[in-house]
Length: 168
Image 1 (cartoon, one colour):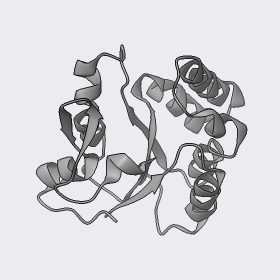
Image 2 (image 1 turned 90 degrees about the vertical axis):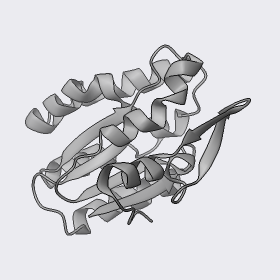
Image 3 (image 1 turned 180 degrees about the horizontal axis):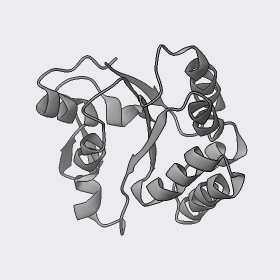
Image 4 (image 1 turned 30 degrees about the vertical axis):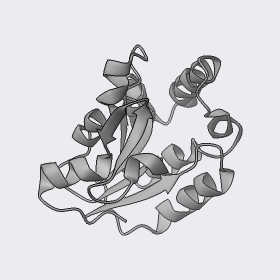
């Protein structure tokens, strides 16, 4: 029910593969694509999905540009076909869930980030999660976010929420 594809934000091949995968997914209207996009863009993404108005999607892209200015390594998303993933999801009438939360960039927010992301994953329907590989580390794996801080990954949080992990 839940499939995860780990990506490297700077690798166009991952974005293109995922974009090209969506039309052939055995997903129905109402199933979901979950992206590592800031959750405060959800209403704007929903407006794009509803209307197809590119102005809405441009606002999400502009938010990514702001993230680049803050030092986040997501330039390739803007330059490449990453946002075509959302366009393809719209064609299939899929939900697109923006699951990320960098918030104010504080350690407290960043340490809770994967938990926040996992809580945004729908409890019903088929779900494709497309997020940075470190967030989708298998099973009970942990990874370092900052010195001396260890955070449970999205995959581990899915196991907590749904009782098992079938993510790969």
